[in-house]
Image (cartoon, rainbow, N blue to C red; front, side, top):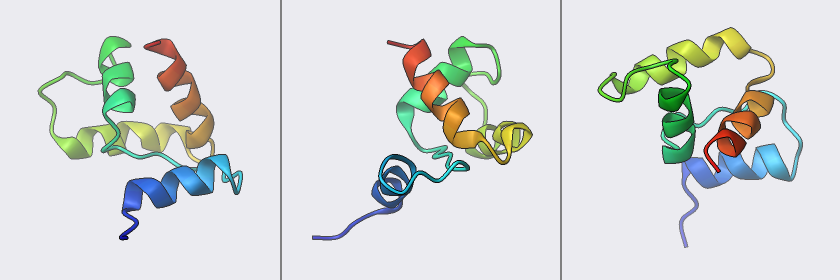
Length: 71
């Protein structure tokens, strides 16, 4: 079994309690940012990472809020 980058990031966030985790490949995070008007749905992938730099060192908290915003 191979563990990918997303799985490692989620482990760091939810099990190890890291406060600066942001997975720009996560579809729900991308959708949350699009719904909130932070980026357009046709934005390049690096636009999500670039926008998230504003939240350093608390990107994990922003991620949790973005996930809950689309539920």
